Amino acid sequence: MKVKLFLAKKSTIIMLLSCCIFVVIWMVEDLHIKQNRYLKDKVNSKSKAELATVRATLESFIYSDIYYANSLSTLLTVNPHSTIKQWDLIAAELYRDSLNIRHLAIAPDDIVKYVYPLKGNVKALGLDFRSIQNQWLTVQKARNLETIFIAGPVDLIQGGSAFVARMPVFTDPPYNQNYWGSISIVLDIDGLFYESGIFDLKTKYHFAMRGRDSKGAEGDVFFGNPKIFDNPIITETVTLPYGGWQMAIKEKKLNEVYPWYRINIIRLVGYSFFVLALLSIAIIFRLYVMATSRSFEDELTQLPNRRYFMYTLNSLFSKSKKQGMPFTLLNLDLDKFKNINDTYGHAAGDEVLREVAKRIVTALRSNDVVARIGGDEYLVLLPRLHQKKDIYFIIDKIKYEISNEPIAYKDISFNVNATIGYSCFDTKMESADDLLHKADRSMYFNKIVS
Image (tube, rainbow, N blue to C red; front, side, top):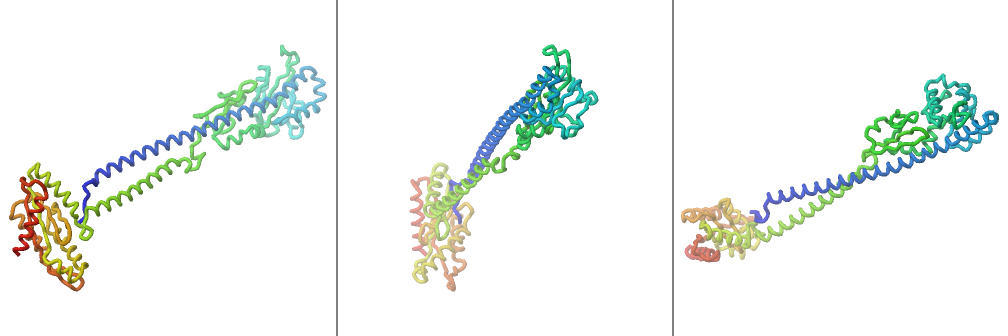
């Protein structure tokens, strides 16, 4: 018979465990959310810093290259004939010092007559901007603005596409009434984007640019996915001599930036620690239950021992004193047990004690309590039972179960009998010891009589 510890309430343990699991899950998930928010903020802050750096770098490269347009415009304004005569020399010098200039072109009366370098750009010679509507609009825009206007990306007649810085040339500054023609500085898109870090930015983030023909946020997207502008986390405006471009970065999912274990590190550590802690607690609790059970259990018969029985007896006695609830105590002793021990050894005696314990339990009700308190002596509590006929019925049933069949040990059979005494609870009794003494006397009296 297994002892049910009075402290171990299954429902309480389940409730406490459920509360612990809920609290742990709440804490871990809360920390997980905060950690992911931190990672997102870290990625966003880094992307903002990198976008600002790229924007500044791109502006510096553009202004550095179109600065030469101003120089060439000044030369043409002061001495157009001399400048054209020395075109190759001047253009070579400007081209050599530039960073991302693909080629330069001069178009008196908006017809391209001079190009440097000529190699690869022969098709551009003789181009009348009026014949290509898109380019003609940008040339007119620069003339009307009377300043540099960056067009593009523009599809070039000689192939490929580029940004084109249009610079109008007037021979009567600052009145700018006499229009001479235009200068076109063609900027290499790939070189410009590579040097400024845009290509690197595109590989790391969801990046796009818009503002074709310097229209800023109102212009078409010319680099990247247009959907990026639906909900960007950061935008930067590239300021051009007139207008600008807008760059944007859209937030990336964390699993696109970090490996899965980095994203779930809080969960991995938190739940692993919780499982280990739970296992440790379970092991400790199991050891505690085992130790406590052994302290309340007879090791030989697995019945409750004297300690547990006395606790139950005292509790029942106190309750009965208050409520007047009757109960009966039985004292059982095996007859001539010492002869079995002395003749056949303690192993045989132990087997008899174990079998007797099983037979007593078989004869009792489910709410009765039986304990082995030492040697061959057993005590039995019979709650809510005080009628003599009922008591004798239980006693006779126990005796029958014990003696009905011999107890076998190896090739030996033992006929075992028991003497049983009893005492009923009386409100006049002062303590449970009175019950024990009365039952003990009753048992010895019956043993003498028999």
